[in-house]
Each structure stands twice: as C-alpha cells, then as structure tokens.
Length: 133
Ligand code: TYD
Image (cartoon, protein in one colour):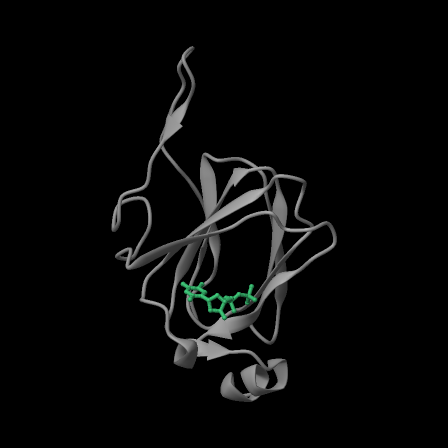
C-alpha cells in the first residue's frame, strides 16, 4: 500500500511576487486528467468524506489553510496544509476528509482520472470491508 506524502514544489522567490508550478510526472507521480477546487467553505464545514478506488490526487492550499485527514483503515494521518509551495499526494485507496477550513481558503486538487461517481466509496463501513478489514 502506497503512503501519502507532502511534496515540496519549485519556488521562485521574487520581489514582484513568488511563483510555483506543477508538471505531471515531474513534481507529482501521475498524469493530470482533471483539476477542481473547493472554495467559499463556510466555517465548521467538512468536505470529501469518501475514498477513491483508482483516483490519485494532489492537493495544494493555494490560499488560507485546512486539514486533510487520511485513513487506510488501520492508521489515521492528519496533514495541515497552509502554503502554496507544497502539496499533499494521496495514493488511491485512502479514506479522505477535509476540515478546519480558514476564511477565504482555496483548495486546488489535481486528479489522475476524469470524474466518475463509480470510483467513489462513500460509506466508511464499505470502505473497511473493501480494504479487507
Ligand atoms: P464530491 O467529490 O462528492 O465532494 P464532497 O465529497 O466534498 O462532498 O463532489 C460534489 C459534487 O460535485 C458531486 O456530486 C459531483 C460534482 N463533481 C463533478 O461533477 N466533478 C468533479 O470533478 C468533482 C470532484 C465533483
């Protein structure tokens, strides 16, 4: 089973403003098939209580901060994201939840497959049995 990891991105510090970038198969280990973003999250809300069977993701806090909580059925890991020059790589098969969004936070998510509702596991008990627990 592959583990999630924080990946530091290239960073061009400049008096005019800083710049970072991501290229598929370079900074992140997959081809980017889709990009989506989560914004205007009201205080106290949670997003994304689900797992993907095949989809891999890379999440960057482009603005503000939030926590990504990951669970493989045996272990729970929490990653606070709050800078736009690093992100979290999430392999397939992890239950993931996002919470603790700050005001005006912006989460950018790069995904390895096109949107498919059939790739989702939305029931935690089903996730555990799919993982063999
Ligand atoms: P979803 O991934 O279910 O968000 P969350 O788990 O945080 O509630 O997405 C919410 C809705 O957005 C879902 O009903 C379908 C739609 N959606 C797309 O059409 N394309 C996408 O790429 C994503 C991520 C969601």
